Amino acid sequence: MGSILIGLIPALGWGFQGIIMQKIGGTTANKQMGMVLTALVMSIVVALVDPIAWSPALIAAAAVNGIPWAIAQILQIKSFDYLGVSRAMPLTSGMQLILTSVIGAFYFNEWPHAWQMGVGFAGIALIIVGTVLTTYTEAGQETTSKSDIRKGVIITAISSALYVAYATAARFFNVDSFQILLPQAMFMLAATIVISIIVSKRDSVDGVFGRVEGVFGLKSWQNMLTGVLWSVANIAVLFSNQVNGVAVGWTLANMNLIFATLGGLFILHEKKTPRSSSLSSQA
Image 1: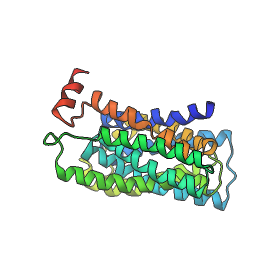
Image 2: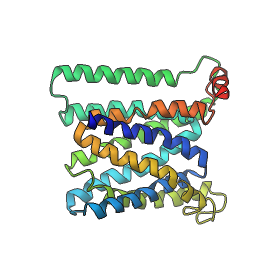
Image 3: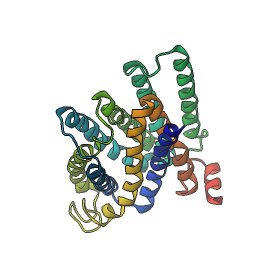
Image 4: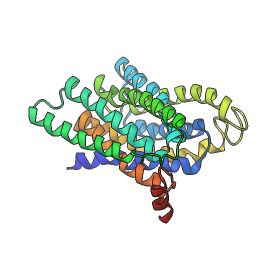
């Protein structure tokens, strides 16, 4: 029971992460940099408590984990601009569930019995149906342009595929979840700095190293609050994947779509249709 409760922590952290991020604002680079800076601080604290035994496998796992995550995360943040949190999060959760569950069940052999396969995939099917329902829009009632929807779905699909590497790296290389935290954060930071400099040249109003929206500007530091939510969820999901298995651990984590969808509608007042608009305005 305790391992299941641990597996649910990422759902809360990642569910509210996008909501807080949109409330704070800033460029895509600011939002990601804030998360990575917090992740680095928290991973250093963990490393002081549990010293790292460096090895080639650990470094390889951290690279396969951290670099794809940095690319995936910045794409997901961008998808919020096109689709909104209430639509983007269910989509990415559904896509990730399919990929990670297939890998967990067939590659890691986490569901060795037929009944586990049946129950597992039936549960995933229900979550996917829920995902489709959360993104459903009545004919003729769409409030987002078709061009933005198309861009958002493509970006979400790419980021979801990259998240699979992040979700499975520690298990694939058979390294301890807490050992990988600091090396992971180092690769995340390095990749994020490179990506953020490129993105900031286009998006920042005061330049790459501006005081407000620069790579290390005020908005990046404010978004460290987002990083607290992400870091707690990250530590929990790595541990959950280790004790529950990737298929179960990642499925529990992706229940974040419940909090993200409701938060997007009632806190951010995102509009999918006039009906959902009236509901969110009453909240």
